[in-house]
Image (cartoon, rainbow, N blue to C red; front, top):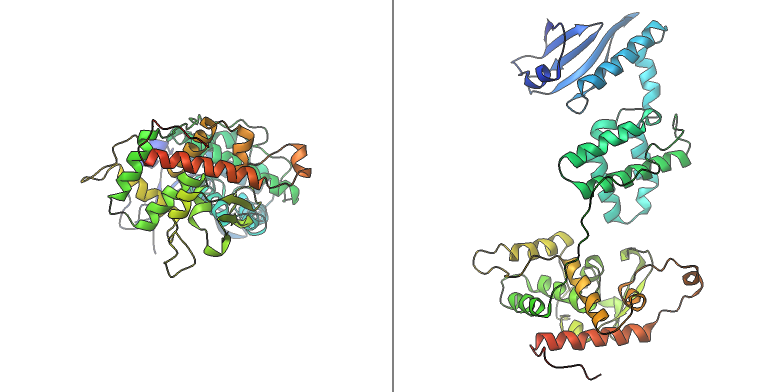
Length: 392
């Protein structure tokens, strides 16, 4: 499409931001081959035009992902290449082999693919949303610590503190992968030893006995799909993680013992847990499918969130998540006198001690004892007999 060329003495951030598109493509030239192209769609990008035997045009970056100051800096680097007898288009092609975007592709293909599907997708989402729009075409070896700080500040500025911490962890892993695989031009990790910038609030929501009873009765009278309701209750009854409970299959249950396979476990180790009476009653073996709870993670969490805003019959207790149900089970085991180390075995928490490397005992008797104790305590709550004491 034929465009219009205009000369502008000095660009400014405000001028670029307020620049409106026209019916044709318009190139605004500032000088020394530096110009801003505005498409009829409103898309804006910085370019460098120069002569090296013939006319060459090199894209510097898209606006607003690349700010004016950064575009000018990059333009000056290209001008310096020309003054030293180098062709920026050739040099940039060589640089692109070592760009952060190419490093991410390699990381996702060769390293992240080994991770659980959920974690791989989460890493890719973080990179696509908060990192690649700013670093995709930059040489990985030229990214500095100050660049990482600027990147994380963008996330913090929108109030996403937890996301900022996740972004730091993800980017750090990508750079470590690049260093381990001798990525071109990469000599150090700019995110090494950086402190997580986000101020995450520690979540400590535990349901009281009265809230447990309200939650249970509310779902008995709601229109929510039965399998979703049963899975939420199952998490409370067993203390399992959402992912561990939601995708169980009948073949994983053998005489009240559930064995969650490695690929569904956070610590990459299979986990055996005993199903108490309350948990067993929630399993409906009449369904013609291999899953007791045929739903998905987002559907489970969304169904719970909707109960608090239901116009006709809202859940009238403070908001909580499926993870809070697991925390509630663990807290009640503590009330029953069990120690954190023992509760951790039922919850499948990772023991990082040296002894755990040698002690591979599954503690089945202890797990069964704790599961049955919590099942009896939960049943008392559901029977609304809070004044009764457990006698066994």
